[in-house]
Image 1 (cartoon, rainbow over the protein chains, first blue to last red):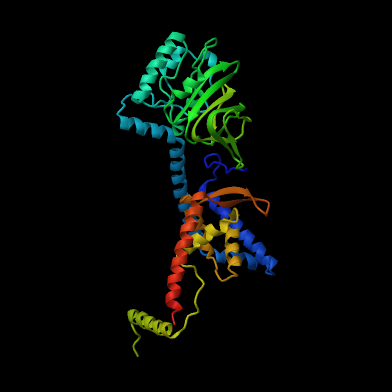
Image 2: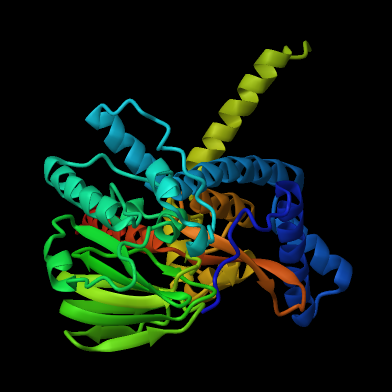
Length: 285
Length: 134
């Protein structure tokens, strides 16, 4: 599907936009009038007259175009910062004073798993929500387990699809080390939030993710990684941009090729495993 | 004979005009009612993206030329619709082989069109009840 160029990628100056548009209109009208038997000069004159006072029209359109651009810039900014704003509002409401964790560069972060250390995880520079009591209890448990295993863990997790950014998605730490038995069923059962996506293990350059959610994720694609979904519980619908719905039940799987824009949608509570490059970039669209 | 002062002249001119105006039966205009143009533009775009000129011609041809779009109002209306998020503009290659601004209806525009159509139906029914009453 052809997408509209995003406004900040290419925007002609408003004056140029208006001039080109009016010139195009006059040219089209002139051609039609000539086709109906008018001379070039007469046709051009009629086409211009139909537009009324050209100077006034231009001024009005330029003024409206500027207002439109201002509003579009604000809307775009709000859209881009939606996750951050939601989080900021949540934290303000919760009265959390420590703002250091709020500021997250929302770029297409790459992750080097080898460089990821316990110290980095401890710095916790990803978008986090303050934990509710149940999450806190779980975090204490996870922290103890991590210390035992010396594996970095997410102390607090992004638990709403709206709060997920490319950076927070890419910076999920790896929960379990090699040679460690992982009980995925109990890990899934332990999730009480509406959304949780964790990297459980690393396999060569790829990873196994466990996603538990009952919500709709945002449209996105991974430019550098195929993504395999394997549903374990519930029903997961994967919407593709062309309108296709891939509906997966337990023990059904599908691979979404790199660069394919998609959106996951849980029907009720869904548990699924996802296999993809550990350093998969995510681009929200 | 004294010349009437400027003020008197303009007053008499006004009165003449007023009398002429009162005596003449004006041909009903096919100018659009305020606000109707927006709805017509939205409706036209349900058929797919079009440039401004295409919108104007489409409205006129669909109405068998009974509605004449005032082209000087068309473009300001399109910019306002864009600002409200009811349409988005995209630059694409036109039939002339050069780029032109095409307008496309958004989801919000579709919802607005539904509301506008409903409002028009109610308004037209009300006016008909009065004008067509026996």
